[in-house]
Image (cartoon, rainbow, N blue to C red; front, side, top):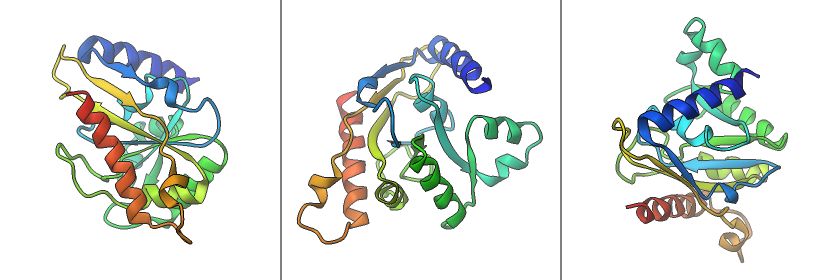
Length: 192
């Protein structure tokens, strides 16, 4: 298993270089579809979200990365799949929903791009979660990836969308997105 090997290798590297620590891993369901919805502060975030947990985490990645010789094949073997930048990719959304319906774990950065300050999130995470029936686990990455300074990855309790949608005939994607981001910001603030 290439994924297991590289997860172990990156875990050692991240623990040595960034003193990375996971908190709340017990909140991640042991089986079934799960979305790990995280803030996004660096290109180093995808491994941070996935290397400290037992389940394999799949990510969307910009399609240009899949065109790089060897690297494209490598990230595909890690479970990444392409998404077009600059617009909604129906193929990527279908792939994400299918992946989740098969009971997998997917990492998503709702803000869509790296952002050191809380910013506007896109509604894609909410839509994918509602269509797939996946549990949404908020994730907060705290720190700044400076060598030998501590990085903390906090996994919160799954977001209860039923309580959020109570009394509504159809889900409000904007409201669900706000709830997800609020939980991420709460986790992040608790680390400061």
